[in-house]
Amino acid sequence: MRIAMGLSMAAIVVGAAVYAFSPRHTPPLAATRLVMERTQINTLARAGRSLVAAGELGVIARSDDEGKTWQAVPVEPQRHALLNQIVFIDDKTGMAVGHEGLILRTDDGGRHWKELAFDKERGEPLMSIARLPSGTWLAVGAFGRALSSTDDGTTWQRIELAGAEDKHLNRIVATADRQHWLIVGERGLVLASDDAGVTWRTVPAFYNGSLYGAHALPDGGWLAYGMRGHAYRSDPRAQAWVKSEVPVPISMLGDATAPDGSLLLVGQGGIVLRSTDGGSRFAIVRAGGRAALTDIQLLADGHWLLASDGGLRNHDPAAAPAAAGSAARPPAAAPAGAAGASAPPAASAPGART
Image (tube, rainbow, N blue to C red):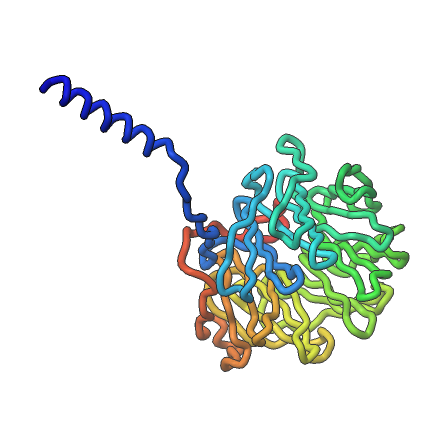
């Protein structure tokens, strides 16, 4: 009897072991879905028909449905450094820059990112990156840092931009033909190039505060904008600058051109400004909340996707515009994702967004 029971137990043990180690089909894991409502987002970009967003903790997310849902994408290695800008030169190739001298590259439309440069000890924040017509990549950032690469990002060399000194360099922008370029930065610094970025000259000072961005206007001129409601319009040579009329003293951090040709600026207080006269005068068309809007993308359905230090928002521009005197309490925009973890205020180069 005991022998029979022992044999039965042994058979059970052997059967359990065989089952435990036998191959079986495992259903694939669902794609990671990010909650984007409260995640700090500093930059938005298009890669073909997809949207790519990045910001706090080095997170990069991709959306194939116009921002309705987002999936985290792999970054190798993940340094958790704040990302400040993503640019794409076509629907596949893109670069991202961030704190600690971080530079990333994608060759598949933002589905995967690999590190090209990182310097935790001496890497000042990089704020902006662009590919010049020569094929050279140029990245700029805090304390006058400028890096160039002539081999598609494999190696980077420190370069000196005359006039930059220790000023923070916040953005690189170009005209549609990519022959004329501006770099704007701290203490009213503007560097201009009229030979596709081969040489740079310092534009005579017209403002002593920080400039956070610039926009090439259809008539060949420029609009430069920055802190406390300061925006300036210039001729194509960037020599003569005239102050624009801005109704509120908020810092402006991003821009876009609407389908009707009007110019949009986004900034603090959830505010979106619009100009229909080439940047001479702006009016408030959306406002509300404490979030600082950092970037804007126009969606296929006519809505605006707004990035901020408090997450993404989907805004319908057909909604009633906010009056200049009611900027503090406008209708709230709908969230672009489910609720998530809270995020700190927008951060970038030291002193770059004060």
